[in-house]
Length: 151
Image (tube, rainbow, N blue to C red):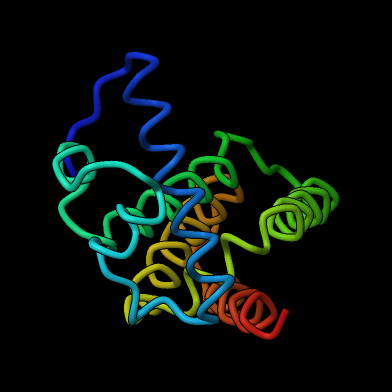
């Protein structure tokens, strides 16, 4: 993924690219067949505009992943089971609110990479916050990932 400028024009362009990608996925019901040519034509932008922000379509999907991971892991500390339950509720509510985006991530060939990154982030957060590194956390994470996928 290319480093993006922080000006309003760059933000507007990346928003158009991401919105258009979502529209194409909704139309096609898949991610794999979408091309940069198709996306820029539908978004009414130039290929240069696309490539000044992204290397390929997968970079756009990775940006959605980064947004989800950043939102889900907002440096919240978990000290007990009640806080953990509240945290899990927040995660699932966020995923519900963004299910259109999240479903995209699970249709890419890189979905396992995303789930592995998500799992590692959950494991590191829980094992650090709960001062515990054991099989129960790994079991919990695997179960959570399966629920997310089924959801």
